[in-house]
Image (tube, rainbow, N blue to C red; front, side, top):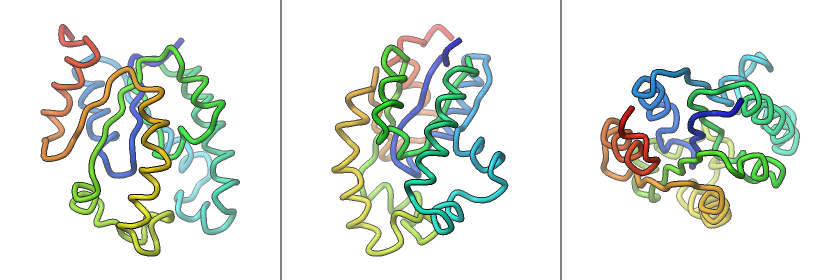
Length: 170
């Protein structure tokens, strides 16, 4: 079993919203590994970061992604940092992976770059830029297709994604 589409990209890019729309268009299920983690851990991701640190969260995330890739055949959205793990990137090889991208100005509009995002608590614009500098090449290295979301509605992104992934007939 393997997902129909795996969505990756930075926090706030719209993976959950576009993922649900893609699942609807493809008449399949939707799953988000961040939701899996919250349900399994019984607490918010930000709490895990604060209580246990990023390394502990990444280990939890790696296990959640591995399970979801093995169990889910619909549309799967991964947390923004999940691609940092080399084993996770290896698991994504051969999958249909859609990288949703956006620039910092779009990130400000969508997320406010606020303290609810643990990795952006201090100087959020600078932190976001640094995160993207470190991650962009990883997203691109595993992507089957890349769709910029800047200035586009979720519906527009979904249509472009279906075209880019050659799933337009759905």
